[in-house]
Length: 405
Image (cartoon, rainbow, N blue to C red; front, side, top):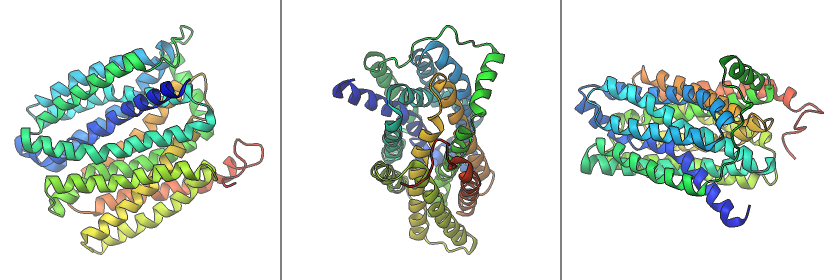
C-alpha cells in the first residue's frame, strides 16, 4: 500500500470511528431543550443515551458474523443506511419514549462503522502497527468531543435540537460516499462461514475461550464504563449543578476531551520504549488515584468547579492510555475471525458502558457523586483484574514475557 492510499485509508477509518462520538456528543447540549420540549427531566432524556449504548452493544454481536460472512463493506453500507433513516426519525420524535426507542435502533446502524473500522485495522495493518493505528482512532474518538458539543450547542441555539439529527444525516451521507469510492475492501465474502445460530455461537465461543482476549476486552470495557459515565452525567453535573451555559458546556467538554487526545499521542511515543501491557498497568494505578480523589471531593461536598474539572481531566487522560492498548492486545490473537472478535470486543465495551450510564441515570445526576462512584468502581475493578491476571499474562512462554522493556 503506497503512502497516499495508506493515508486515505487511515483517514476514512478515522471518520468511521468518529460517527459514534458525534452521534453521542452533538446532542448533549440539547438535553435541557429536549427535556422542556417533551415535558420531562434531563435524567429521563439521559436514558436515550443509555438506550443508544445498549443498541451499540447488541448490534455489534449481529454485525460480527455478517462481517466475516459478507466481507467488511456490505454490512457497513446497510448499517449506515439504517443510521440515516433513524436519524431523521429522531428529528421528528414527539415523545421521549419514541426518542429512546429510535436511539436504540440508530445505534444498531452506527455500530457497523465502529466494528468495521476495528476489523479493518486488524485486516490491513501488521500486528506491530495496530496499537499505533488504534491510538490514531482514539485520537479521532477524543477529538470528536471537542467539536461535537460546540456544533450541537450552536445548532440548538440557532435552529433547535432537531437540527442536530439532520446534520448528522448529512455527515453520514458524505462518509458513505467516501467509503464507497476510496476505502478498500479488506476482506472479501467467505461463503464457508455459516450464519446458522449454532455456528455463530460456536465462533463466539472460540473467541471467548481465548483468555488473553477476555482479560484485555474487560480492561478496555471498564475504561469505557468510566468514560461513558462521564459523558452521560456531564450535562446534569455542569449545566444543572454548576450552572454552565450551553456554550460554556461545549467549551468545557472540549477541554476535558483534550486529555484523551494528549494521552493518545503520548501513547504513540511511549510504545517506542514500553510494551502495551505495562502502560495499561501503570495507567490503571493513576486512574485509581484520580478516581479516589474525585470520590472524596463528592463525599465531603467540596463543591469546587475547577477541582472537579481538573480531576476529571486527569482521569480521562489515563483512560486515553488504556483504551488503545487494551483494544490492540485483545485483537492480537485473531486473524480468521477478526470480525467476530471485534464484535465481542465492542459488545463488552458498550455493555459495560451501558451499565455505567444506567447507574448514573437512575441517580441524581445533578451532583458529582454518581459520576465519582461510577468512576471509582470501574477503576478499582480494572486494577484488580490487571493485578490478578498479571502472572498469567506475563509467564514465560506466553505471548508477552514482560510488561516493560
